[in-house]
Image (cartoon, rainbow, N blue to C red; front, side, top):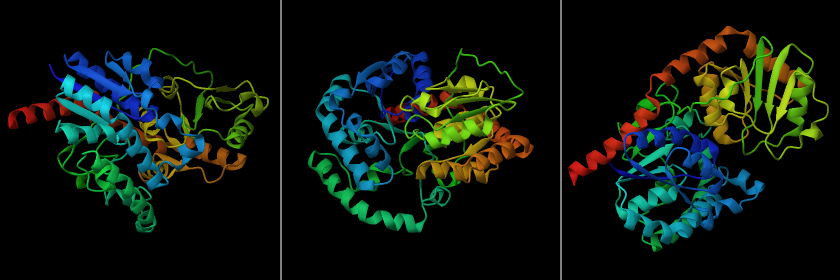
Length: 396
């Protein structure tokens, strides 16, 4: 039996893919401690892991919605959050690690405090990457061209000032890129297939592409029409009343069944009268819905896209951030979805019916699904973690 610590940020798209891996590790007899935030406590404890709250050091949980939009766009701001969170957790986490003595740390690629703790204490580390793995080759698909990278340079210079705070605390960090980027020397689990990952051949054998980690669900969705359209903008940047109203106008009183998830910050009453063929809810069991859906209008978060394609559902692509644009570009490139060109009633209708009526989109989604299912899932991820531990033991 091994002791394995997980670290993650307070985001469903980053947490959910790890949960089946944790279950698999525990079923193999390992002990797992999972450092996360109280909003994830129930999900994590349901795996059998020991949940350890980071909320007393809740730098991230104090972010406003406006701050949330800056993350991913402003490198210096993102680095400041990551550094401050790492330093806030520093003493408590280091004390825990020294007492518990884990055999391995698995850290989300954005939960840098996991990676930095492993570096500082020389504990074997596995990076958990729930987006595409990123290098100069994959950047070509992910909307990170030369112009954008050059535009990041001033922000990168400011970000490196925060890195000095980490070095002052004894963390062996060279620069901001050594904290946030993928590298070919780190054991890395990527929750997609080698076929879906852009330029997967450019990554070293330290990488394992395991496909999405899909949870089981007992929830059932009844299909009441021949075609079911699912609409969701995810759980973070999902306030867009004009979009939801346009969808209601586009598909109300039609022969489609529509399920629309709008989040808990959207006032459903403010969306007006909702026809009987449309169900508008704060949240849904997305896995249950996708098993019945024919088309999905999505914000293109990696988790949502992966779940949809796993169930062979073609996509209408409506990304809200640069990262989501990168995912959308890959889906579009492989033919499994089409971009929504404008947030208008006519363009929404046009995009949905094009994807729904053209068999090539579902065929492409099916091919991606088959690649996902061949990739090994949670079992392959658990194998990678066990291999990292056993290899380190042999060396030592």
